[in-house]
Length: 95
Image 1 (cartoon, one colour):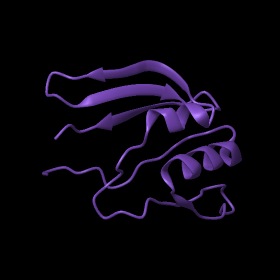
Image 2 (cartoon, rainbow, N blue to C red):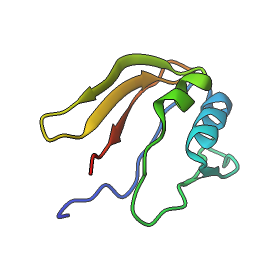
Image 3 (tube, rainbow, N blue to C red):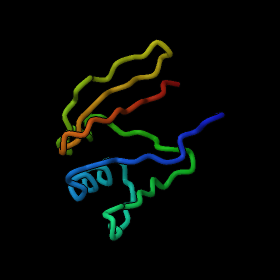
């Protein structure tokens, strides 16, 4: 891949709640807040973020904005909002 994503940022007005949601959903390790409030996320994979299970997100109080939808290339995408209202997308590659 010529231009891989190497880091992402999640901006939240409720960082503790956001941390609980994403670490529960994806199994991420989240570091302690620095003096500036920044929390480093370790996804524990060398291959990038692997995605999640939509039902799991809903069980953790996410709201489905766009249900799982097949894309023209055959993969699936869904758009959700986390418990603080931040929207995020999940993709699932079909083999």
